[in-house]
Image 1 (cartoon, rainbow, N blue to C red):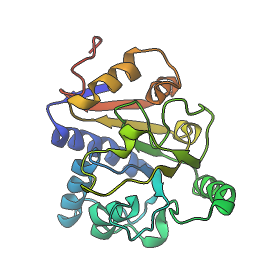
Image 2 (tube, rainbow, N blue to C red):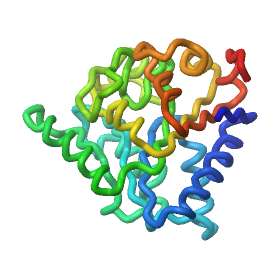
Image 3 (cartoon, helix red, strand yellow):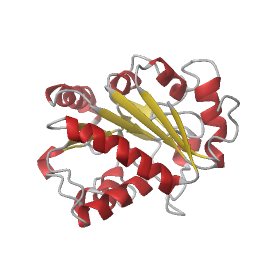
Length: 243
């Protein structure tokens, strides 16, 4: 399903409504969460609703898509720091319910760390919903163009366009690598919601929705999933022919 909104705030309301329906039906919802500018409006809405007493994450279990490597959790550029500031410290999500990749894991322990993350998702009951953004090159999580469709959580090398994400502190070099869930990890989710905002995402959105289904545009592989909702503003949808 494609849903186009005037702006990211309207998109956040739509996504929140979609998630409310799922949260109401599942006793202990398991969510995969993104970072970056894309989910900021949604997280702000969740914070507001929590403060008003109309939203709770007390029964949720969360996992995040990715983390820079090497990068400490207390580093301001880390995705863990972002999530703590934007969501985790501002709602009632229990600390023990937060699953996060370790940006300090030693290279010799990558395989076991990544396998343990995948196993934790399984033991939680699998992902009820995976929330995604999309990169300007069509990546999802840190799965850059060319990532295998059957990939699982692993260490990845980051494209230059990914490292130059909007809002990154000026004068600070982004790490060249990250740890990311794989495309198959994402595809195993029962529901996927992809959000895209801004004219700089229009080309990636067009390739994902109207181009060939190919690992050259990882987001295009989502078209093979049974339940995906694409939510975007007018600018991100501007290049689509099939609206």
